[in-house]
Image 1 (cartoon, rainbow, N blue to C red):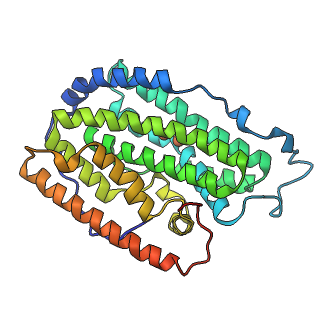
Image 2: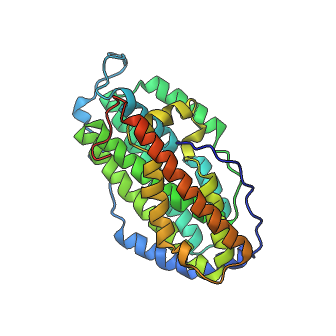
Image 3: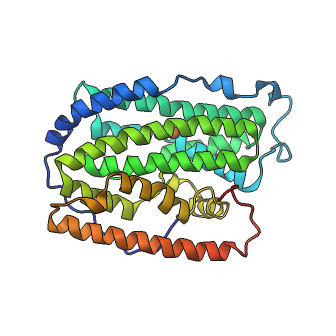
Length: 318
Ligand SMILES: [Fe+2]
Ligand SMILES: [Fe+2]
């Protein structure tokens, strides 16, 4: 998804990051314990239809083999290449939260291990079912990882805001990809991954709630910066804009989903528009946020009007 907006420089960091991380550590500990209690252990091999597997040396992949075609195939490819880039995300997350030997570093390890399972289950599914050319997929992974995920290491508040939105965006795009596939096996995998992404979102969202209490103005400015600059983590995938446009047309992830199902639920949870006692820059940021949400709404309406004339099938209910 993309929308034309003038670039807005991120606001400067004017709080003590180390002190904030330290103050948030007990909260991170409680949220980690809650996460460990509710997160279910699961195994990628339980989700793969191995009975469909054949040797590639005896029977190489050919383009007539996939059951998934068109946008469903593109959405799976983008979903897997995005998950593949975990080493880059780990580097960033570790840089932001990896200090010390307490709850933060425990979370970084746990989160990374859970994320690793997503690429495993997606690749195994796509390889066994022959739904994507395994050679193209591996070459895509090589390109993607060598390029890395280019994102300046943000400060704690910007980083927390980005990952909260990003985990929810990923949850919804994976979930809708499963629905769109019309394949119960793929759908079950995506329901499983989306449940993980949801718990990740809840961790980051709730720790940022605690940060808002400690640093309300800096937190609001960081949140607004991240909303205005938001890009999906797959934005570096070759041909991403074209692929994202197809994914939007199918209703898997479009402006309406982004605004109504990703931005608004989290912004409302943080009660951004109800906070009082903010400094002038945070008040100004909040006005820009309201303006941005309105612009998104208008752009989403225009997109929906165009879609009414399109013949591309949409996610059911989208
Ligand atoms: Fe993931
Ligand atoms: Fe996640």
